[in-house]
Image (tube, rainbow, N blue to C red):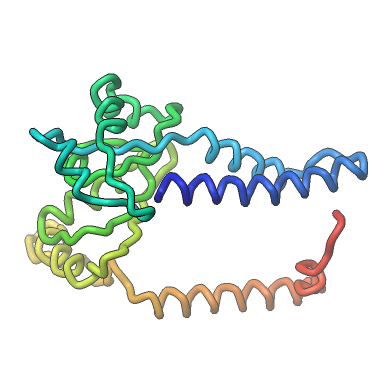
Length: 223
């Protein structure tokens, strides 16, 4: 399903970018920087490879076939296992220039796997304590201009994360577990959305102070 959704998104973006490119071409103009960035993003997504990485088990072919996908078809681990056996997926994933950029894992690579270029993790399995901290640490390796990662939680693990942070996160060096200022590392969505809305409002007021009609800019076409 992930690969299908990814491909569908690529097609959607391709249609949009191609339409914009056609408008520029019809006017005899070169694409602007925004459109060039959009084209590069579509090409990047289209070239991206998605791989499954799971531990091998005896009798796994028959075991996986007991499960079905979203089209009610038996799961086929063989196509993924062949790739895992023939290639060094771990090394491929560590190379920023390699097209293998999306890894679907269960337990492998969640601990002790260092990939500085890894930027986003999507969680949909229950985890807690040290295991959870180890997992989210995968995307928080810094390097190459990257200061932090992004964790998308599909499983409602906010409570578990707060508990894990309280237990394992380090504070100042005096061993109290508290720095000079205490700040909740994980905030509620409502707080983040309120801050986002306030930032948008401030941006609008700033543009209006410069005489810029934001609504007119948004509605403008053909440029």
